[in-house]
Length: 171
Image (tube, rainbow, N blue to C red):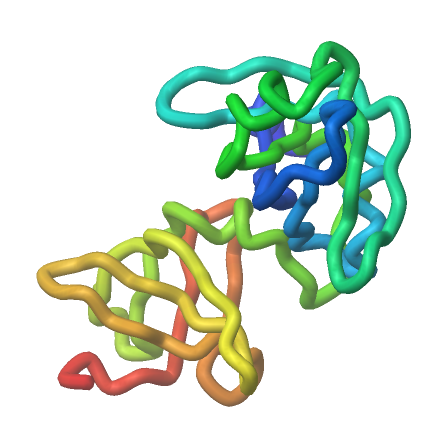
């Protein structure tokens, strides 16, 4: 694992609701399957500039989401203080991605350039659509570039900090 990953956190979900009166929270999970978020810990909750680590005491799938009980959140009011918080875990807890697979967190900040070497900007963030993932590239203007490997994304070079794309710079 690269040295710059030590101490880095990766966002895996968000507290998006309250469940019951004993401090349980509803969780929107970015992991696949959703309940995998429960495998990692401690969770760092971050909301409006404040962060705190919580140990996951128990959790389970509930309907289409996840519910969890965190150490130190013993009632609904304590849990409500973290409503909307991002959930992150240390990057080193995550398994290494397979060949041709990438964590979004590893792509953020990479320089994006066309196959002809035209710089388009840097990956600001990514989002999921029904069809594919999309990179938001910030340069002299914002571009939305589909993260479709082989068709659009031709090379991801984490060492060099670069993604090469088959993309018209005018688009």
